[in-house]
Image 1 (cartoon, rainbow, N blue to C red):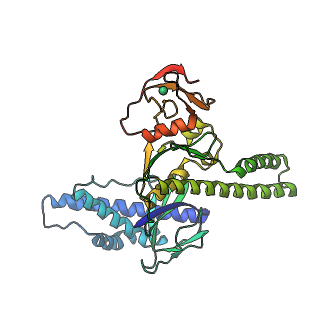
Image 2 (image 1 turned 90 degrees about the vertical axis):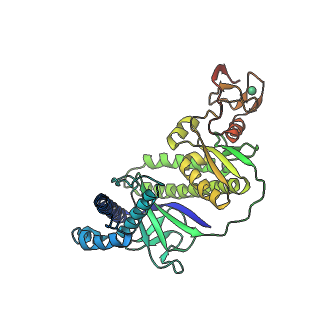
Image 3 (image 1 turned 180 degrees about the horizontal axis):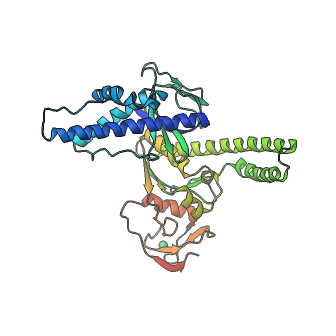
Length: 378
Ligand SMILES: [Zn+2]
């Protein structure tokens, strides 16, 4: 099977400029060819003998007419505009088959991306050494985490807000999984890392809290020291070391958790919270909060693909912590300080996070959601 993998890049300023240029060329080539295809389709209304240009036709025309007039095309890898034309042509094919609408023009800053390739599938020539990847025409760019294979034939670089990502596809044999794996709801805990509807509790790494405290202390100590002083420099070095350690511990814990979830369950249901909503609602200081919901979700996405399981994102308005998981018919206010859910109607008592995860497990689109009563749980 082909598995997709996406991770952040850490480009320097020069590389960021190169990325932006490549996005600009990809967008220009795409929009130019889209306009040209539309023109041809207009002409075809009166004369059916006119052929819709193929990707190759578009490329020839681009080289003859567009590239020579826009010399900034020569500053980026030749695969960038070529792939943009192929993508545009495929988008029109989908439109002709009526599986999608007409391709729209791309706007600057919206889903900016470009494609690169080198070598062949059998002999991929975009190598990485675990820390950096060598992109054609750009050079070695730092990776946020190692790629799963040592070299790739092609990749897509994309931009989200001010962050850059690399996406690759690679072939793996799907690992065997057990039959009849259960469905699981997962609550990203306030106190714990995560609590599942099967009653499993994943604790925040022990070292985490201790190191976090040390880091806060160091941060204060840095800000107290005189700018430019030797002492301050030493404190900054200490701080960045502990920061890196914390990042590793956090990554490790989340990798273990997402691996376990994807491998041992047929379906995983989690709350689809944005980072902002997440921090506001949960006020938690655990590992997932710090690296963001995005990373947790991203890992679950590719791992569920690998282990043939399914990731379901539960509607973010679903009041998972307010509903009684026992009777399901009642919903109560549940202040953050309440650690235990006590149903005033049926008397059910359960740990707050466990109750929430059970509700997540039962969730489906269109599920009956009781009105919130005035009673407060507990
Ligand atoms: Zn109840």
